[in-house]
Length: 74
Image 1: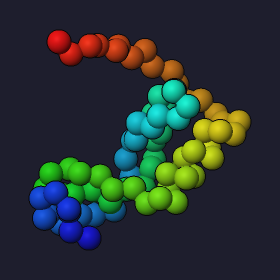
Image 2: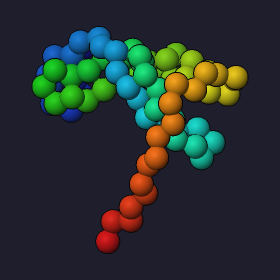
Image 3: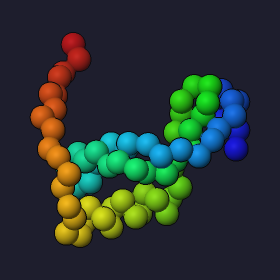
């Protein structure tokens, strides 16, 4: 696959993905993605995103919790 943004080559990798669902932010580890080797743009298959939604909507193990600051840009 060629990156839509910069035309660079891509490769399959396992990444962390921030994911919003029903107003809550999650950090999902070990997510398959296609990543541009040049600019870092990440592409996720629709089936992967659906699987994340199903995982989060079911009972799931929580590995850790993080404290995240929300800052308003002025």
